[in-house]
Image (cartoon, rainbow, N blue to C red; front, side):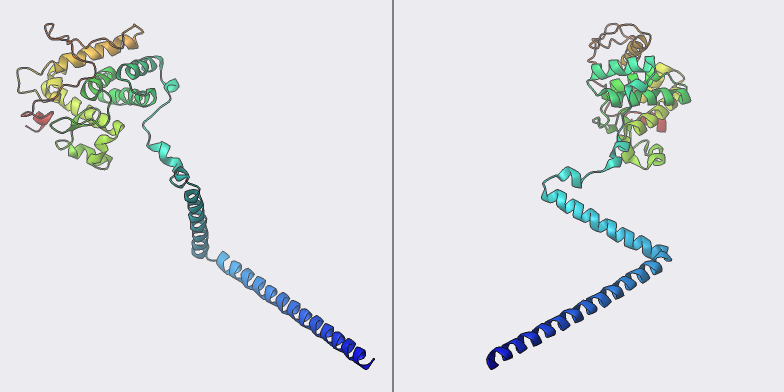
Length: 287
């Protein structure tokens, strides 16, 4: 009996001890959480009055979340998610063909099929040719005809003598004209190349005193008796574009027959005329 009473007393003492310890831990935890909460509130109040600190905290949180998102995307094997750039579309040279006028749409559709390029970028270039042509006092079909003959609408084209881009402008000769667009690498931006090319073309025409002679200057054949049929090809393609704009049917595989020399063989619609190696394109402007 005495042993049983002793065991009961020990159990009672242990129970009291455990309850006291539990209550103590609960009290300590409660007080600690209260202190943490007060500290957080104080930090928020302090940070709320400091815009710079608030910005730093927000940036740090955003960077952490972004890094977690990229790490998760890479672990899932989805590289495109980690490389996503929603604003990349702003760099695209494209326009909805539905936003063009009837004439512009007809020309864009014909050029797209003739030179096997997408209608959206061609539509953007047609719009630009109309816009720049109006400001420069040049027929937009002339501008587009030069693009067709020079590069076949390849914005990355380069000739053997260094003419670059849609309108095959001699970048090293006209590097000053690209400064307004950020530098010579803008030669490979289709819209910029077209704008600079139109400026060069206008200067060539003004210097030569006429369109055909200006085209000879543009291709770098001002000091030669023969421009290789270049002016004739440009004017022939312009004639095709004008007929398309007026609603007439022009086959997309129609040969470019130079109007100025009837005996010349028809040229391929996708073959630009290269300037003479010893007379670089447009260099006559610097004479």
